[in-house]
Image (cartoon, rainbow, N blue to C red; front, side, top):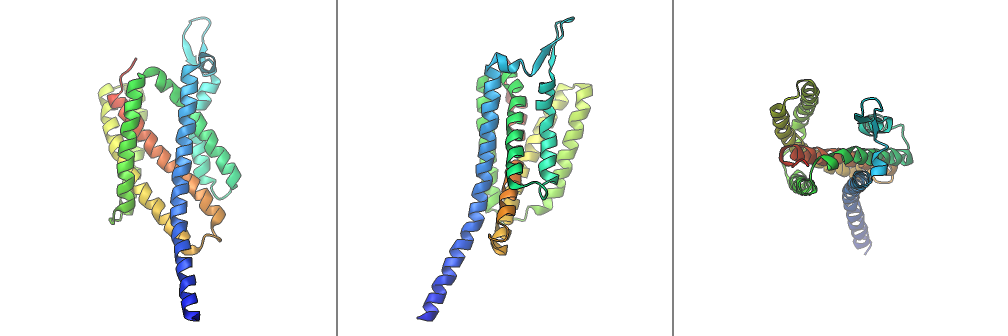
Length: 251
């Protein structure tokens, strides 16, 4: 009788531990959905409201040319600093502070995306968003279910991201439309592969938390879920932007 009770307790612990990994994975996608929702709302509000858009733009009284305001530059470049803050300051930031930075990043990114909504037709934005969601969903399932170890591709993909950033900076000076389209195709390939890689990595992080015990790593696991959500958010966002660059119809 005692042996049966002991086995029942072991099974209960097993079920409880099995739910830890799933709970972590669900938290990651919940935070990703929160970030996408905040960015979408911010982008829509600023693109549809002229008064809000005036905060991002300024008019030169002498030439009449429209340029970026201080707040516009903040919305464009601050998200990069916030990403670095979340990445390098994970151990120093409290859970509440990390949430605040994550929410601020999502909103500012959405505000910066409002310029894109003004440049492209709503139909192309919606279709490219749906296409990005489809690609992301397929690769997320593949990354979660595959038995192939994708970790060996991580360094290669990181080199590809760095090369893509450098090429984008170079193209700011040469202004080549053909080169921009070529980079867009390469970008889709890189971030599509990164989606599967990141999902498998997140799955293994959840399994590691489960193995070490949720009580010990409870706060840290919540913080890691936010950072993991950020990586998936960036994967999805880049796929969407590159699809829009290729297939989007400008107004």
